[in-house]
Length: 86
Image 1 (cartoon, one colour):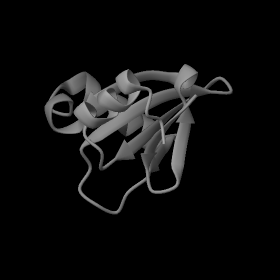
Image 2 (image 1 turned 120 degrees about the vertical axis):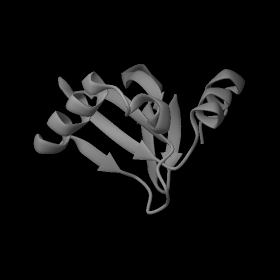
Image 3 (image 1 turned 90 degrees about the horizontal axis):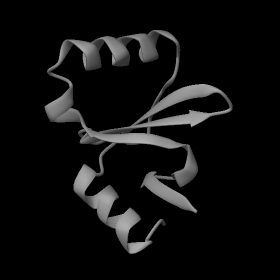
Image 4 (image 1 turned 120 degrees about the horizontal axis):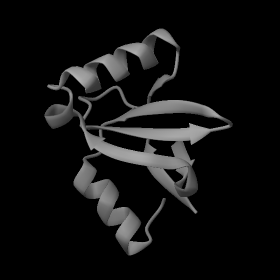
């Protein structure tokens, strides 16, 4: 099954490590450092031109990818719980 993250981007739900609220989590030093390292390594994928609301960490082919999405954590969680992935 796949989860739609915004625009034309979907990820296999088996690859999702975590879904995080960008506003609440980017205030911590560890999260800022993680996102900075991911950016330097080219592992950030921005799936929206709108204001980001969440980031989704996935492991794909032994690489951690971070998707930045305009979709809220609440909406993504509801999609997963209801089985609505597209």
